[in-house]
Image (tube, rainbow over all chains, first blue to last red; front, side, top):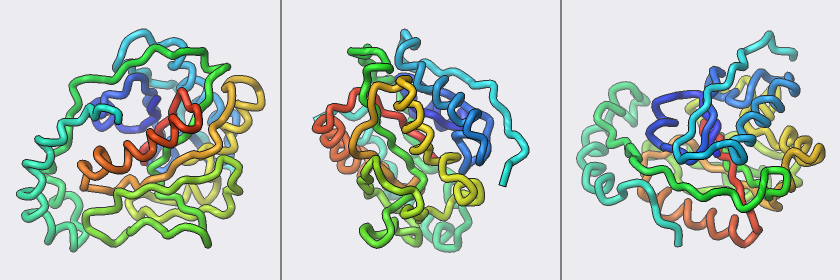
Length: 70
Length: 179
């Protein structure tokens, strides 16, 4: 499974199963020190192992950057 | 030996012309101009294997291209070579994240320095395994540098070596997080 933040490279790679997020490069898994959000991103991505039924499945996740907690 | 999806022959045919033209710009770190005409592979087939078991019973490994290496035990990735670094580092899944450093100069490290999980979610994956979302984590996980133009070396050397280790460890699912 892939987890990326840029649609074009992710589509060029053509993973069997992949999730796309709208987080900046260097924070693909989510906002720093937001473990609930990071776990949600990972759960949704990993769930593709069970839910994807065709090669090239690509799902865009709904999570958005939050104010970082230092 | 796994079958590469990438058209390696086509990439090898086009690469010499690109690197000859791009090298001066690469050496000046003028990435925008350098990567015009880079022979980016566009895969037309996605490999597909139906999972043998559900995620909750699967053994998962992580492959990150964040450029992480184990300080004091491993060499950093070559962050100065204009063609990047195609090698990989094998990391124990039990590694203390504080012992990892980044050798990849093509992304802002600020988020990773605040919280490594933002780019290398090892602690988060341990938690999900502990909750039973994932069956188990593999004993070894993998790090590469996301800056590498020698994609044929990645396809012909790096990837098969990692796959060999994944099979040896009984891994049946891999999470790839490119940076």
